[in-house]
Image 1 (cartoon, helix red, strand yellow):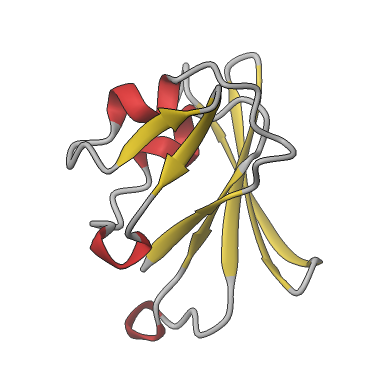
Image 2 (image 1 turned 180 degrees about the vertical axis):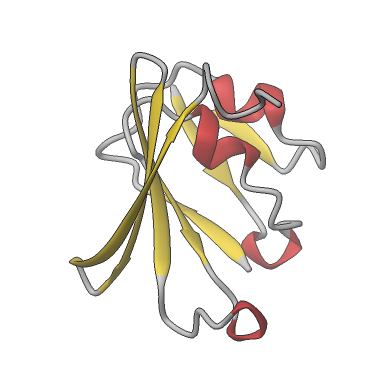
Length: 103
């Protein structure tokens, strides 16, 4: 599992770098950058924090992913987890963060 940062979509807010537990993401020339993608732990913290959809998360074959990517879109308290292959949307999982942890 790994991430890829799309420099065109990155606005340089630095939120991804702040939440990366491995300190793998850094800001360079006003944009987020990960030097060694293979060192990514696969926690997806940066993907969830990115407000512009600039970070793609690649699901590993061990998770049934193969060449499937995930991107998170947030609208208010709703998270949409989009799973796609080659820009072809396969499935969206919608989570309302205000209700997700209610018991």
